[in-house]
Image (cartoon, rainbow, N blue to C red):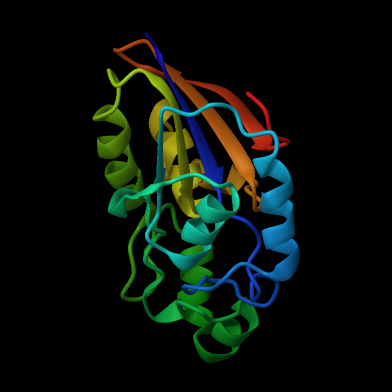
Length: 191
């Protein structure tokens, strides 16, 4: 039986509009309500996983699934920029921010380059090639981008071309040998 993986970015957080580099935040009231609406249309699952971060765990709970915590689904380490806005960083570290924006795969100061996130999620994905069944994994925008790049064999700089909003779904299938991206976009429930 093929593996069908539904990789979902968590719901909107309380500070998401103001923060450029996320911290471990709770879902906003609107974010929680949006996730709960999707729970009514959630397909039958064989397994579920979630990042250990608060927003991912709360999203899984709102979907009413028992999701095993999975460190490989954890957000990109934003280093000393974690929890800070782009405006704040532009004012305090303009050269570092310009380098991060212009670079192929720079890490935020003290943080994790996207290539490392791609390796981490790639190892996790490749370890599930033969699992079979329908699997939900609740994660973060950066990790969802990294998974897409891994499956496509794309360079980390291609992440700039992927808009990942809260509750974006990447649907992958695996025939036991290789993963294929079936769909990428806002999740409306179902599948």
